[in-house]
Image 1 (cartoon, rainbow, N blue to C red):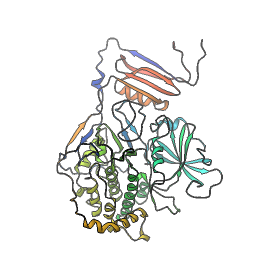
Image 2: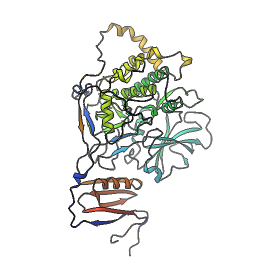
Image 3: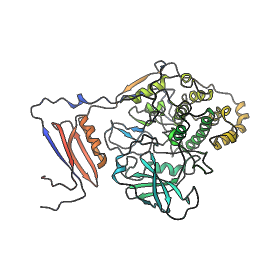
Image 4: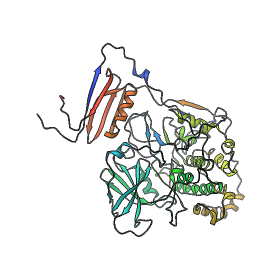
Length: 529
């Protein structure tokens, strides 16, 4: 007998064949995928070759569904091919076929943990790069594919922020996470490009320790979601106006670096540490879905494209263009901000409460049908004007950030009464004041406001009937999810392989099985088992 290898796992299958049963084609039994929406809203014009979109069909709908106060989960639906990558975003590793939605955890109270989090615990102490040693303490939550903990410096450290801070935020991302493509997370590239950008928290150290990639960042305070909850799930117009102008300023600086955030929502805006000079300062976090709107080589706007089988973001706050699978651009962040402001002001959005597999389709349809008048009927006029302006922007249009900020001037209170600092907005106001005379002398363009009376929606079914499905680079903790999903679709394991605790599976409709049992063994099983 050859010596058996330990540490490598392989499955043992117990199956029974069907000899005389009349088996249906599995394609006939495949569940219908959640329909995605394809259509046009406004005009989609590429920077150097994209086409124009036409008007929209359909009328305006009314009615408000049941309120669901818990925020939706951010996720990304990937196209039907076994390759990495998204629309314009960073590289992603796809562990399964396209009809599966990739769940991404936000910083919401109702997060779903990834399987890899439980596979290997985070280390008790961390030291990456040239950083000091930190003791890992309480868990703060989850962001993107990672999880965030408080790190307390083992020795030294006198500051509240910065590289010499005695307390920091440690973001862990497992090496088998979908955000890692055989290397550091894509988010690291974005932070490297944005470090020092206004409103983006500083990353002081980064590196890998054990199974985890680790970011050492400034620790921040509560999110706008937390503040909204603490205030009885509502905010005053003056407070939301301060949030609006400062968030616009942060997005302006982010966009100036060539990136769009891709997941603007209350949970991703945080205040500074309580008791620190920055406790009223706003920060934007979680760059896992950020993508480039401007090409690095040429400096030109990326080309317009539309992939109805791709969705990136959080359903509740995503722009209509994101629902339709259009390439992300600056207008999308601003539209998501508009929904965020209305949510903070009113406590809900009209499309909350939709459930089921076609939730994304129903939410998109509602967003396209509801008028700004109805959407903002209990809001101050600046919020309606902001919504109208950003939802009618062209794909490659450069937002007029100072003008958007000026919409909220009438709602901003004196400095000593402001609950949020608006440093960035004040700088923009000074620039606006210097340039106002020149702007007045220029002929003004007519701005299209309101939503088009007609719109159209195409129902797109991203799931094609399949007789075989291939999964690879699957961590053991997530293996059962893929197998159960395949069984639901009439597919059973026909081949399996394992190496370095990662799995590859082929699930097939032509096995002749009607059921299948698998078992993970702690030792390598001999071929003749």
